[in-house]
Length: 422
Image (cartoon, rainbow, N blue to C red; front, side, top):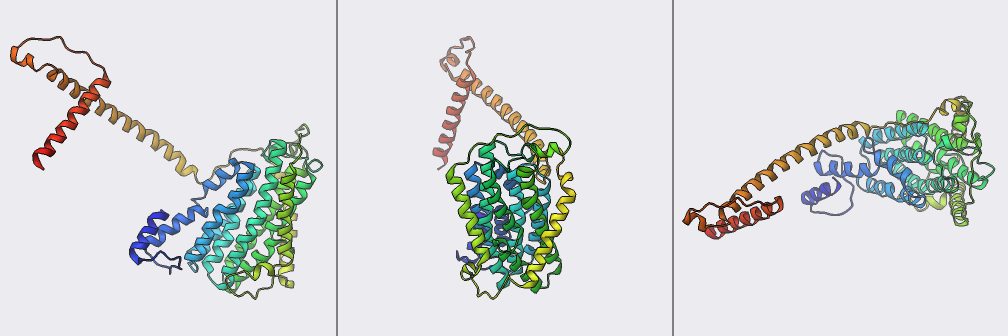
């Protein structure tokens, strides 16, 4: 889709420059947008991210979280600033990702769905298209690389140490993986937008840009998604991984579980997490290091009383809400269906029947070709018999011989026709 859109765009404009495309109904612009949207995990094209990240290697998931979707965000910033359709698509992403992150069981699947939610903030900002909004999208993309890498490193450390990846199989690791827990909480505070962490300096800029653009409903949606981010990534995942009893989700239903064995974490993993955590805190405490690198002049100050009070209220209310619903989050684990079910199930049904029909047609054609090849080879294997009228015993040959003979005769026929009429 993306490549087809690029070719159509080049054919229509004659340019290969990365320039902003004005909102239009051109097929090339929408094809490219759909292709980029697939990489940005826009619903319903997002299923690859929740499937791939939980199954990646411990290190592979870190690089995927940092690089794959951010390249698409860069393209959206360059090509589609100010496209209003992106505002509501981003809002859907922010809420959709948070809802699914609250109900899934795999720790890296939680983080994968939270990526969709965080990308929603960036897509909203790109759709708004003002200088502050685009600055916010760029800042949040950079912040997201840092804190999401830290979160995936911490989740990978848990998997590396215990060999387990589901919340229903974890718990009670605070004493065994204390440093991993503390470093994870830095990432959790960052994604929640807590003051003095890097998520705060970028989320608040995007929400402020939405307010200045008079997008009141979008502001409320993004604030709600912030509550969700703190619930699923800042509270739910660490609680059932480190704080709840072993097998915490089962234990919440009165089922005991044996303590979980946890091996030592390699030193290089710990050092990498410390570096990422330091960058999350450093840019959160002094954001002007990052603000000075933004594409547009920045006059935004995140450390106003209004922003600090608003964020603190959100975090306190989210914590209180988690305390009330944590037992509901400790349900028995199961399979969570996503929208990909609607095209994977029919696709499988259609694919099986399509393959069956194609196989039957191929079998019929193969049988027919073998019959024709057999008849031709039987008739032409001894042309002298035509002159003498002698009868010969039918020659028995296998399918391979018949196919080869038929192919040779067919090629000879085509070559003869070509030489005759050229």
